[in-house]
Image (cartoon, rainbow, N blue to C red; front, side, top):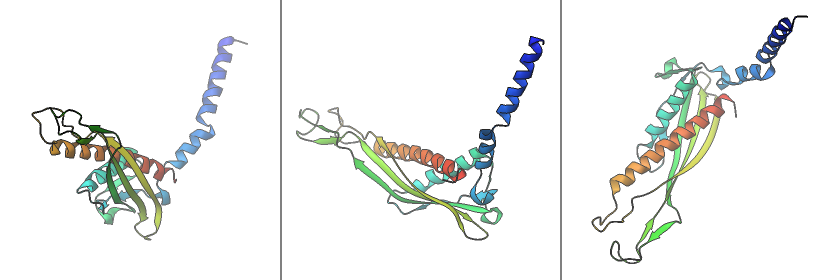
Length: 194
């Protein structure tokens, strides 16, 4: 037999096996919303935490993930949606870590002053997919995630107070980062029915 013919035949058989294998078929069947929802609305999250306006980060992050997923149409009106994807922010906790800076030199700070070196932000969120027609909950999950940020530090003699604007900005950036991570995980688990 001709070697070229054998090579082409083996290549063709391998291509056929790879494209019709079970893993290829499984991935096509899994990546969809429960209840075969094709259109979804994402209203603004409910925020029962004491952190103001954090619901905007989570709502936008979830909408971005639905758009990125691309197999479900995101609609603005509930009347046009088959499913409603809602979220509740239960808590946003800020805790200073045990790592601290203690002033030993009175040139910069009063002796014994303690500054937190790290603040840990922890968020708890519940996300629920409801069939609009039947009001049946198709999927629901609770997520908790944490990240650290560095609060303002007083290190120069000309600075006699912490910069609150910097602290607020760092906290908001950390919350936005957490929202993106959590909503990506939530949508991945939603389409895989975990």
